[in-house]
Amino acid sequence: MEHTNREPIPYWNWIPAAFALAGIIVFIFATYGPPASSSGFVSTLKGFFEWVAPDYVAAKVHYQAIPGPGAWLFAFVLGMAIGGFVAGRTSKKIPVRDMPPIWKRRFGDSRAKRYTATFFGGFLILFGSRLAGGCTLGLFISGSTQLAISGLYFGVVIFAVAMLTARLTFGKIAEKEDIQ
Amino acid sequence: MTTIWLGLFSGIAFGFVIQRIGATDAHRMARSHLMLDADIPRFMVLTVALSAVGLLGLQAVGMGRTLPLPTSIVATGLAAVIFGIGWGLTGYCPGTTWAAVGEGRMDAIFALLGGLAGTALFAQLHETLIPVLYDPTNVGQITLTDLFGNHAAAVAVLAIGFGLCTWGIGKLWGSRERIVAVEGGPDTETSPGNAEKKAE
Image (cartoon, rainbow over all chains, first blue to last red; front, side, top):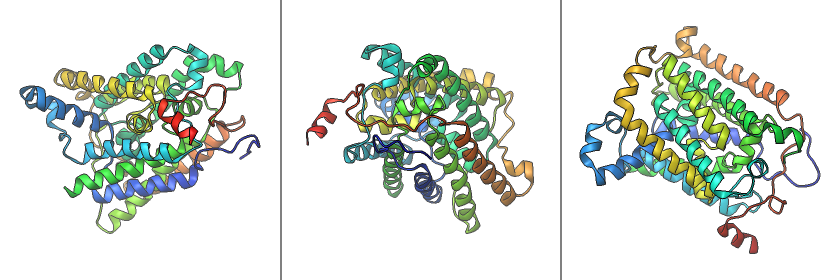
C-alpha cells in the first residue's frame, strides 16, 4: 500500500474500520435484529402522513408493514445523522463539501444541477430499495451477513450497475485528469 | 423505550464509522466506483465477512434475531439496477445520506428529499407493483445454508469468498496512487458551518 508523501490520508484504515463496523452490526443483531436504513425513510413518511392524512396511511400496505417514528428504525437513522454530525465536527481533516470535486469538473459549478441530480439519485435509490425490500445496509450487508441469496444478488448487481453508471458519467474526465 | 435508545446509540456509532472511512463523501464514492480507490468496497466486503462470523457466534449462544429477505428474481434484480444508477450517479446510498446530512453536506439534503419522494411514490404504487414484479418470481427466503446444507459450512464459504474478494478488489482497484482529499485543495468547497471550523 503506497503512501504519497504530500498529504496524510484523512480516512481510517479500512481493516480496523471493518472490524469496528462489524462489531456494531453484531451488536445490532443481538439487541434488535437485522439493521436497515431505507426503512427509516418509510418511518419518517409514516410519521408525517399519520399527522396530515391518517386514513391514507391506514389504507396502504407499505406503511402498515413498518412502524412509525417512535421505534428502532427511525431512531437508528436519526442516530446516523447525529453520528455523521459528531464525526464531521470532530474531524479537521475530512473535507465537508456541498459538491464533489469530480462532479464539478464534469458538470461545472452549478449547484442547482448537482442538487437536482442528487434529488433524482436519491429518488432512484429509495424507489429501488423499497421495491427490493432493503438497501446497501438492509439488503446487501444485513442480508449477506445472514447468508441470504437476496442480499448477495442485490449486492453484485448494485456494484456492477453503479460502476458502469460512474464510468459513463465521469469516465472521460477520470481518464484525462488525475482526479484526486 | 429501551429499543429507541438502542437504535439511537447504534445509529450514532454506525454514522460515526462510515464518516471516518469516507463513505459519506460522494467524491470518494465516485472514485471507488471508478476503481481508483479500493478502500470502501474492501471495507464493505470485509465488514460482511466479519459480521457473518460474528452472527454465527451469536447464534451459537442462542442470541440474535434474523430475518433474511426473500429473493425475487425480477424485482430484486430490477430494484438493484434502479438503485445502482442512483448510487453511481450521486455517490449516496440510503444510510450514508442520513450521515452526510448530519455532516452538513448540502447535496445530501437533496438526496434525502429525493429519497422521501421515491419512498412515497413506491408506497403509493406498492399494491400495483408487488403482484406484478415481485410475487411471480419470488423464490422465498433462500440462503446459502439451503445450498450447502450446513449452516457453519455456509458461513465459512461466505467468509472465505468475501475474504478473497477483498484481496481481488485490492488487486483490481487502486493501481493509481491513493486518494488525497484534504481541505485547502483548489476544488474544496466548504459550507458556512465548515468555514467556522476552519477559522478555529
